[in-house]
Image 1 (cartoon, helix red, strand yellow):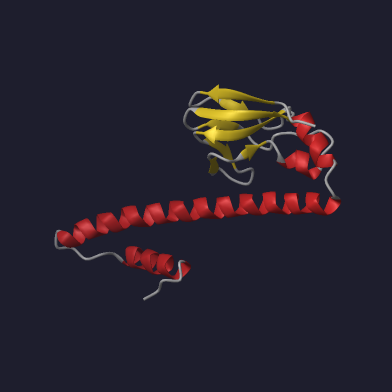
Image 2: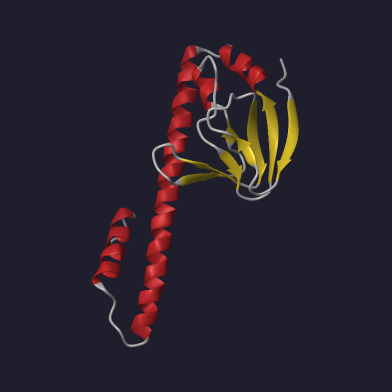
Amino acid sequence: MTVQRSTKTFDAGAMLAEAGAPVREIYLIRQGSVSAPLPSDRRNLVFGPGTLIGLRDIIEGTAAPKFYADVSAVSPVVVEVLDADDVAKRIKGLSPRLKTCLVALTRTALRILETNQQTEKRVSRVVAKTKRELDMILDGHDADAETRDALDALLVDRDVTP
């Protein structure tokens, strides 16, 4: 059994999927990136090449798979489109143990991505603040306690404390 495939291109800003919409197609990102807000807060996760969008409910065997979030193109995106019914049929044929592993792997990958993006944002904020503070020091001023604390916390989080 072969899964039907095609290719689609989305312009930056285009919606690939809407939260709550039925999953009829699964998108494998080939080029570009998309973002999806976390249901728990206002942050967006950004996904790039190699990411499958719309697979989670199908792996979990949900009767009526739906997209969990709005998914929009951050940049021009090229996706490989997989027919959701074909993929669901293939997954149904897998052993229960393998399905459980796929679900766990999918959830773990999402948590890792979320954690990495949170860390990236923290690092970006600290780097920007540190640059401002270094500019101040070079101009003859002293760094503030907040910057020193942020740098200390960052170093501890990364296990590179001097």
